[in-house]
Length: 136
Image 1 (spheres, rainbow, N blue to C red):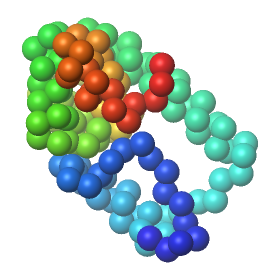
Image 2: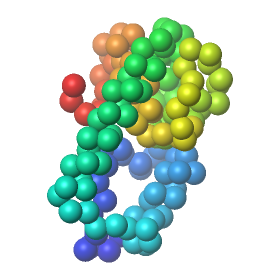
Image 3: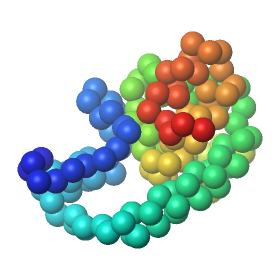
């Protein structure tokens, strides 16, 4: 990535299973295509929108079962899925109690799923699932 560009994310991509959306984002960030300069107001609005989306997705993830939490932990901690790949994998499971987000690879939903799984699982797994998540 050229030195005059800054790509911000809490996600660690190295060694992760990536969703095609991850690949597109990284390619775009690397090439500069689709890059938009943001002023302070636009950046603050994006942050507010992301927080509102996370709040909505936390509500959706609240119905997660312990079995689903174990699946999320397996995807993230064992298989190394990115948040986007994890969200898509859970979406593709077609669970009736966890559905309705768009796009299927929504990174914020992947974060919400990890956060909820961490609440349902033992502390040793919870710590790994919370890595990289925003402080509550």
